[in-house]
Image 1: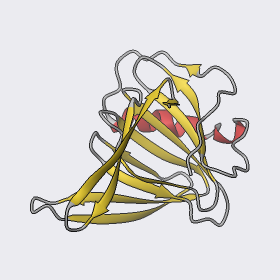
Image 2: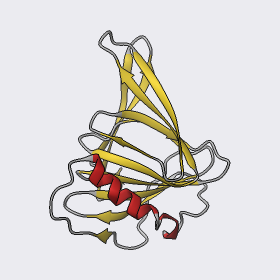
Image 3: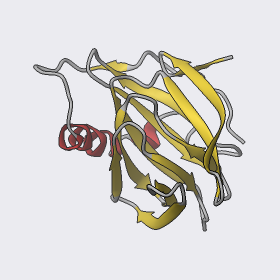
Length: 175
């Protein structure tokens, strides 16, 4: 289950000389923020998956996400945003979906331990899961700022089937 975030303080603002358009720039920001992930209130022992916006600029937005054991998010993309996820502590399992020309789909599963990352562009469909043994923290950096997530079901005969679209504004789920 995903719960809506709450703000513990105003997000940290960074000024950047140029827009961030590549995964390397986003990765550098995410790795830098990963060192402070455990300092955000409410992240130490989550009972449900939760997130906080921790940095915002005109070029990117960064979130810390806390994952209890068993915490997950279903198949989704990040709309028009490019992004990077860095595991700050614990481990996560990412499953990404590949669509083929014949309409079939395949999946690739990767274990991500502390310090490991995954980068993606618009249209990249994946899910994430914390299989344990303890809670996990991850840093997610999006450019441009995350405005929507499209959720899907994987159907091997029909491919990816859209389920819903969630809208975000300033790091908060618009209900």
